[in-house]
Length: 82
Image 1 (cartoon, rainbow, N blue to C red):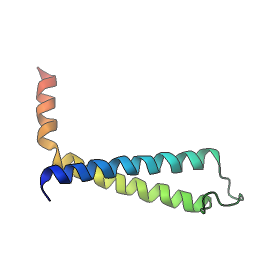
Image 2 (cartoon, rainbow, N blue to C red):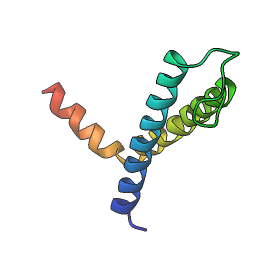
Image 3 (cartoon, one colour):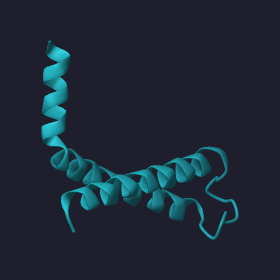
Image 4 (cartoon, rainbow, N blue to C red):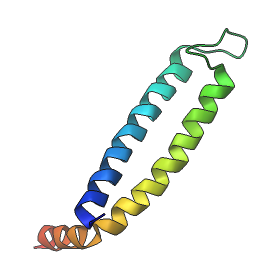
């Protein structure tokens, strides 16, 4: 796998993790109380686990994304400093 393919994989994974966090966060905010019936097969604690672990994975993939694109970020910062 070359660097471009790896960047595409990391970016796509970040997008999917963002969508999972968006959906799980919305479900937790609007839908579930502790004593409610499960929603889409998960109770409140299940959705909290999905949200937490997706957040951990997203933090990891953000770090990988920054590592893979560090030179680009440095160049952009130099452009902004002019």
